[in-house]
Amino acid sequence: MTPAIPGLPTVAVLSLGGTIASVPTGSGGVSPGLGGQDLLAAVPEVGAVADVVSRSVAQVPGAHLTIDDIVSLAATVEEAHRDGATGVVITQGTDTIEDTAFLLDILVAGPAPVVVTGAMRNPTLPGAEGPANLLASVAVAADPAAKELGTLVVMNDEIHAARFVSKRHTSSPHAFASYPGPIGWMAEGRPHLALRPIGRLRLPPPPPSARQRVALLALPVGDDGFLIEAAAEHAADGLVVEALGGGHVPPATLIRLETAARRIPVVVTSTTRAGHVLRSTYDFAGSELDLSRRGVIGGGCLDARKARLLLTLLLRSGADRTRIAATFADPWT
Image (cartoon, rainbow, N blue to C red; front, side, top):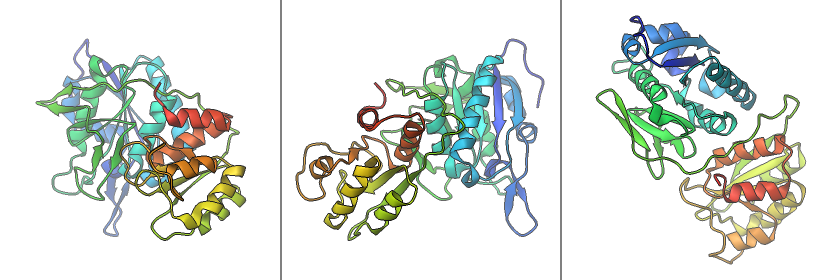
């Protein structure tokens, strides 16, 4: 890495491992093995963008991260901000980038930018995009225009808001997308932010002793909901259901859902991953009006993965059913 230019903003890069940091294992595959300094050494151009400090937090695949890991990471991000970092970049495995970004968006206070990135192609492959993603992420984290935007995901020269982004492809460099779309992009090495999300959802970090668990179940065509009883009766503190269309479920699931909703919060989301779960359009068995009468909570505009994370944080913070329903109805007011 080239020496930093005096007067440049400071950006902290926290490395968690993942494909961007992978090395060959000798068996034909790769596994995380590069530290933060190794990643930065491959991108000397960052020295012209920011004074970068790095820290290797973990060396794990994205699928190995837990909610507790990300809660701890939020504290590390805030520590970096207190130490003077203008912004923070997190590198990790792409499997759970959307989860990390969403949780950090809720847990990290303050205006300083937080950017999460990774790579779809590991460093041993032609066209590995990790260095470009890292450079773009540092540029976004150093840009004053990125303040007050919450956590962002920067991949493939696109800038996404954490609340809407998700991984939509198993291997394409253009795997990440969001509805209604990116809020900005990179061009000629500079970030261009065109949109600003309205409102912020903030929750305090849950206490270390909080261990509430939330199950996530899909209810596809013809399902009778036989797994709902297992979730409600065997240690689940909450349940998120990925339903069809506007938030509709097969009628054979209704008794089980109603019984579960008497015991634990049950939140319904849509498999479409875009738009709001309907509130008052349809009134048939398994429709949104029917589910509401049975005590099921509408998941608003969040997809199932994000709804599970939010419900987990709410339960760990001691929220009751009324507060849970109000938060899902409009998280960003």
